[in-house]
Length: 273
Figure (tube, rainbow, N blue to C red):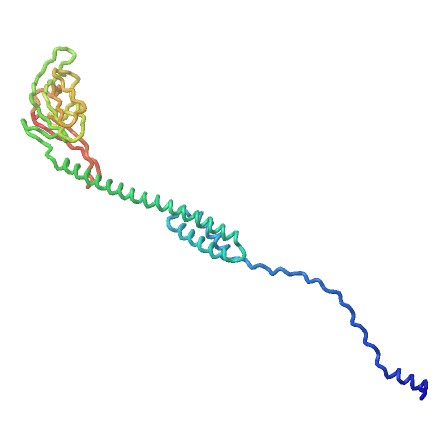
C-alpha cells in the first residue's frame, strides 16, 4: 500500500517535538559571613575594678576586696572567646592591688600596735608624773630650826649662822641700816637623778622678804653645781638683811604642775635658822 502524501504529513504532525535542554546557570560564589562578636562584660568589669582596686590599694581592706573581685572576674572572663586582653589586665591590676593592700594593711596594723603601746606608755608616764607632782604638793614645806629640811629633791641643813659679818674689803660692806649674815649650808641630792643647785637658788627670808645671796665669798664658799644621786655640797652663803631682823628662814622655791588644777604652782620651802 502506497501512502499518500497527506497521510505522511499527518504522521509527522502527530509526532511530539524533542525536549529542549535546560539553560545552564553559572555557579554563584558564596562569600563566608563573619558572625558579629559579642562584647565580654566580665572582662570589662575585671579591668575596671582592677584599676579602681589598684588606685585604692592604700585603703586598708577595701583595696584587697576589690582586687580579689577583679581577679575572680578576670579568671571567669578568660573562659570567654572575647575580651581576653581586658581579662588579663583585670588579673594583673587586681593582683597588684591585693599585694599593695596587704603591705599597707601590715603597715597600718604595725603602726596601730606601736601607737597603742606608745599611748599606753605615755599614759603610764603621765600618771607617774602626776603622782610625783602630787607628792610634792602634799609634802611638808616649813621646817623648824635644827631640822633637816627636804627642799624638793634636796636635804638641806643650816649648820651655822653668823650675823653682823664685816668683810675685809671696804667695797663689800653692808648698806646703811642693813647687816651681812653668813649661813653655812649643806645640800644633799636625795633624788634618783642628778640635780643642780647653787647659792642663788637659796634665799634668806626676813619678815616675809626673800633676800638673794650677795657677791661676797667666805671660805669655804657654797658652790653647789650638778649633784649626782647621794652627793652633798657644803659651804658659806652671804646674805644682806635688815639690821636686827628676826624670824629668819632659809628659803627654796620650785615649780610643779598641778594636773588636777591644770596649772603650774610655785612651792616655797623654808627652814628657820
